[in-house]
Length: 473
Image (cartoon, rainbow, N blue to C red; front, side, top):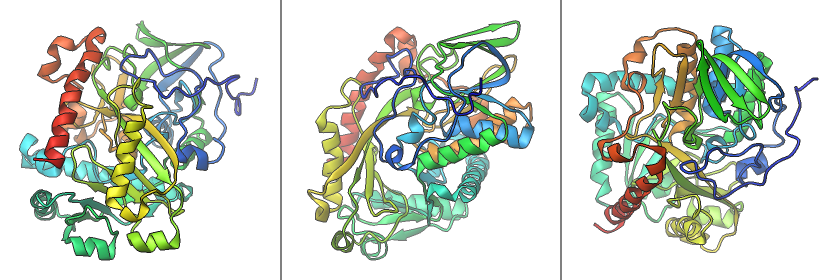
C-alpha cells in the first residue's frame, strides 16, 4: 500500500482546552488550532499517513515541529540517516503552527549579561558563538525556502516604561563591547520616526539580527525537503508507550509498535507527562495568546507609521511580541491563561486587544480576524537543552526554548542530529548541551506527575508579581 499521500481516516475536533500538564497525550489526528498560519499556508504537503503495523527503524523522532523536522532533515543531509518521524496529529500541529514567527539571535529567556553572571565571561563568549551559529543555521534555511515569506532586518526591543531604558542601555553596551554586536539605542522619537509609532515607547534597543517568517510555510518546506531525502513522517500516530528491550526502544502507537535503535524527543510545550521518564515534569508549559488583525488601511498605516516589518518585543517580563505581516496585518501575542481549562475565557484575549489599543490608539476597534493560543516549553533555568541524558542509552531530546524556538530550533535539530549520529563537537561542553533538564529546589516536593498541576499555584503568584513589577512598581 502506497502511503506517500495517505491521511488520517478521521479527524478529532480541535480542543481549545488541551493542557499537557494534565492530559495523557495531545490527541490523535486532531484538527489544527485556528491560526492565521494554518489558514494561509495552503494544504499540508503529503506525509506518510498513520503507522499501520509494526516496523523497525534506525531513528524515531517524536514530534514533527521545527525541531523534529530539522533533526530529520540534518540527519539525512549531513549523516546519511533516514529517520522516521512520529506525530500525534498533523505536521507542525503544536508550537510550530501557533507561534509569532519571530526569529531572533537568541535561545531561552536569559540575556547575554545574565549569561556572564551565571557562567562567567569565557563560557558566555562561547555560548554566544554557538547561538550566533544557530541563527546562521536558521538564516540559511530561510534563504533556502523563500516561500516562508521572510522579513529580515533586525529586532526592536522596546522600553515600555522610562525606567527600562537603563536596562536596555546596559544590555546594548554588553552586546556591543563584550560580544561585538552592532547594537544601538534609539530615542522614542527615533522609534516613532524610523520604525513604528508605538504609544508605549520610551526608547528602544535595536539588534542587527532578526527575521520574521510564516512559521507553518517554513515547517512545510522542512517537511518536503526531508521527505525528498527519504525521511518518513507518520501523522496521527501518537506515542502511547515506551519500553527498552535489549537495547532496542519500543514505541507503541495505535497502529503498531515502532522499534528503533535511537529515539529523539522534539515535543516542546506539548510534552505530555508519561512520555518518557527523562522528560516527566521537567518543563513548565506556559500558555501564550496571539491574534492577527484584518489588513491595515493606508490611513491606519500612516497613523501608526508602521514602517518596519522587523520582529518587536517590549520589556515586560510577560512581554508583548508583535510585527507587521506581509499583507499589512498586525500580529501581537503575550501571556494567556494559567490552565488549559480556562484558556477560552474572553478576558485572556482582552489582554491582547487592550495591549494593541494602548500601543496603537489608531487601531482601537479594528476587527480581529484570528485568535489562538499555544503552549511554550519553559525550563527551570530559562535555557534550552539538547541532550543525551544517559550516554548508555540512545535517547535524546531538544526542548526548553522558552518562546525563542523559531530560530534556534533549526540549530538544535542540527546538534541533536550530530549527537544521534555519534559525532562529537567542542560545543557539547556548553551548559545547554552538557546538563540535563532538572527541577528547581522549590519543586522538590512536587516532582511526581500527581503533584505537577499544583505547581501552578506558584505560577499564579509569579504572574501577579510580574504585573506589579512591570506596570506599577
